[in-house]
Image (cartoon, rainbow, N blue to C red):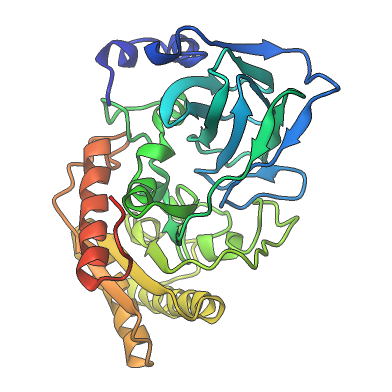
Length: 369
C-alpha cells in the first residue's frame, strides 16, 4: 500500500524509515545486526527459485530466499550489493533492510516451527548482489521448505520489474525510482501467489528484443537472458527449473522512442522485421528448453498500438509454425501513474488479474487460493 507520509520524505529519510521497520506482531522479538554467526551454529538450507550462482550471487530482480526451522532464532547474511530486502516471518511482514550488507539475527520467536523469507524487491543493473545464507543456533532444528507444485517464469522489461510502481509521482529522480521499485508488488509475483507457484522474474528495465530505450547500447534482453549475472560470467543452467507457464512482455523499449540516424535500422519497417524475427527465435529457444510450457505474450496499447501489433504478429507467426501452446494478450486501460509513466501498483493488480483470468479460463494451472 502507498504511504503518503513516507512519500514526502527525502530519499535518505525514506530509506532510514524502512530500515528495521518491524510489524507490531513481532514487538517482543529482536531484529539486530551482529558481528558474526557463532561458530557452533548450523547451516540452514535455503530455497530459491531464482537465478542464483554457486557463491550466492544474483542480479535478476525478485529473488527470494526461504527457510524453515524449529527454534526461536535464525541468522542470515547479506554480502555486498545495493538491495532493498523485505523480511517476513511466518508469512507476516517483519522488517526491511536497505543497502545494508552484514549479518543479522532474528531472535525471541516462540520455540516452535517457523518460516523465514527474504524478498529482494529492488532492481540492480550495476552489479551482482550476494546472499550469504541462513544459519541456526546449535539448539535449533533445520526443516525442509515444502516443495511447490508449480513454476511460472516472467520475462520482460521495466513493466515486469515493477519500475517505480509505488511512487506517487511520475516525476522521479533515479534515486526515487530505485527506492519506489517493489518487485513484490509487480504483476509476476502476484500471479504466482494466486497459484502458489515458484517463480522467476527475468527482466531488465530499458531493454528490448533488439533495441533498448532511446537506442542506448547494452545487451537487449535475449542477449542477457542466458546468464546468471549481466557480465556473462556464468551461464544459467538448472535442470529443476521447468516452468509450466512463461509470460513475456517485450517491445515497449523497441518502439516507444523514435529511431536515431546512427542506429542500424534505417526505417521503422526494418526495425519491425528484425524485432519479429528475433522475438520468434527467442521464443523458439524457450520452447526447445520447455516443450510443455504454455507461453503467453502480452503488450500494452502504448505507442499508438505499435507494440501490441508487433507482439501480436510474433504470436501469429509462432502459431503458423505449429506452436499451439502460445497466445497473445493485449492489456489496455492502465493509468501509468508510477515513475516516468510506468505501471502503478493498481496497474500491476489489473495486469495480474487479466493474466490470472486467462490462465484460469484455459485451465492451464489449478488455482490454490
